[in-house]
Amino acid sequence: MKNKIFISVAGLMVFYVLCFITARMCVRDNFFELAKKRQSIRAFSRKEVPQDKLNKILQCAIEAPSSCNRQAWRFLIVKDENAKEFMSKWRGLDRIRESSAIICVFVDSSFYRKQGEDKTQYMDGSAALMNIIYAAQSLGLSSCWVNCPHSEEKRKELLDFFKLSEDLRPISLVTLGYRKGGIKKPARKPLKYYILPYSD
Image 1 (cartoon, helix red, strand yellow):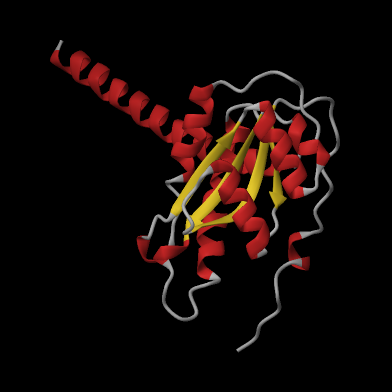
Image 2 (cartoon, helix red, strand yellow):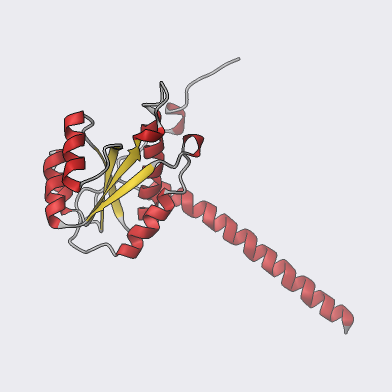
């Protein structure tokens, strides 16, 4: 009887271990599949993106790495039609007003006062931005990374409209929504094309 109980318990333990390993492999494989399927979508339906999904996306964004752990990213969610109209004109791109939401990624430039750190803020902002894109994809949303103007005149125009701090610097925009129609993702070249040769 004891032997049967021991075998049952051992079998159950093996089953749970196998389930754990399988789950870990699925998570790993799912991310690679997610990255492979991600593509920039420029046409969206009018379906609204729920606020809880936007919150999840930004929660993922703040898990990004940043230089010296500054965590200087700041995010502006634009859903109001008038604000999207302004963003469209400010960027000079009509199609972004058709998205369900626009996330404008900023950094607080007061975190980057040392000489030579002016470029670092763009790296930190872009790391968070990539998390936004992958999080959106995992939630069944589509997105498009949109660069934005970086002149002081355009920066002031944006900050004035939304009444934001002078320390903020816009890095890029991400348009979000549910895709309208389908397009084929442009193919990537073989991996060896992107890897630089090196020899000791």
